[in-house]
Amino acid sequence: MSKPKLTGRQKQIFNYISDQIRNAGSPPTIREIGSQFKISSTNGVRSILEALITKGYIRKRPGLSRGLELVEDQISAYRTVPLVGAVPAGLPLLAEENSEGFYAVDESFLPVGDVFMLRVTGESMIEVGIHDGDFVLVKKQEVANPGDIIVAVIGGEATVKKYHPEGEVIYLIPANPAFAPIEVTADSGDFYLAGKVVGLMRRM
Image (tube, rainbow, N blue to C red; front, side):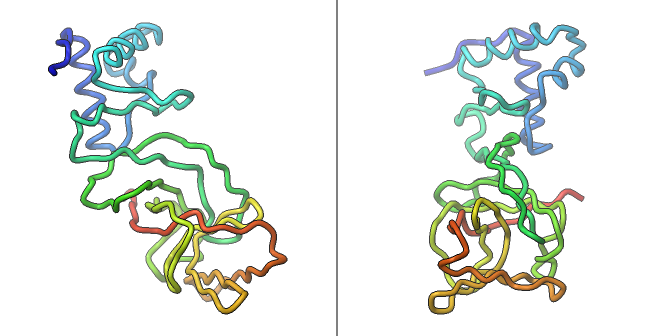
């Protein structure tokens, strides 16, 4: 079933959104769209976006400034992956499960299943090529093999480390000799694996 035709302005804005997702990796904000097309009113931009949503070209994730997504048949070779907060690769900090927006990632780089993206802070994983400011792609899963690079959450705090279980103790091993391993026991509080790191993205 074909979609309703777009007006000239609607098509311009749809193409701009599509190009930003494909080339920049994230959708534009309402203010960026307004600036690009010299639309002074944010309500004017919103009305055009609502028309694109109604006609089935895009969808909007509520509460996010960069929450625009292309409907699947418009971007079939890509999947939109949520950017979820920032996870430290140094001393663990409070993990905040708040999505900051969505990035378009070529499906050939992604495994089957749910995938999310995290911004890394700290230098504890530099020897495996994960640096401060990098984005890691993480497959949601609750199990891992020894040596896997994982995102672990301990007592509400999250960290990126290598996974090394030994008996009843789990060691979260950094890839930087300046950092000490984290030892997880039954007394360490709530602990779970949020997922396995399956990819890396870096802005040059």
